[in-house]
Length: 245
Image (cartoon, rainbow, N blue to C red; front, top):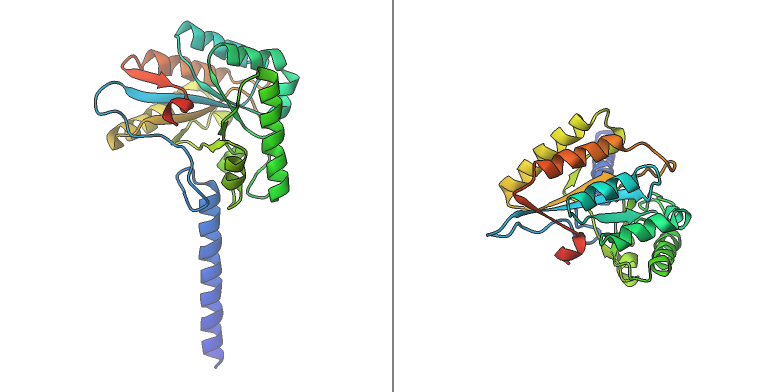
């Protein structure tokens, strides 16, 4: 009897561990659909250039975003910016400049919480407050939403869709927030773009022009990596995420 109880207890523990691991995977993996589907990236067109969607999270950042906008304008490239709502209201003219330049703008919550740990009411407040503030600021609808850290739970994407927001994740992330050089970011990006090419997929790339920890963070490594990516991508077509809706 004791042996059977030990075996049952071990089985329960193993099941609980697997369930916890599955929940964690579903809450963070950008390609997981267990908690609902999200826009990642379509297949590349059979004919024509391969596509890259440059996306930037955690802005607007008065120290770095203007430099990034200058670089994109010089190369006639449009990108997608997921703005933190509280930052956008602090940097109104900069948010308007992003919009006026023709870039797509998405909702990245008001305070950048981990939405896999927030209640439904808090999640709705974070998304709706940001959407309303940016729409009032720009006079244009906001239809894209990226959860901070990619984190979500079963209600997250449902709430986003109820607010008219399309959830977005990614299929490449540059890890630029912790990079010690632009070379590191560039090598990581190139390696993952090559993987997407082999699989026939377009690229939805996450980089950061700001930081949720504080305004004014240095993202010069990111900007240099973007410069190098553009220079090496003459045979590719840069798109905003709304082109894939």
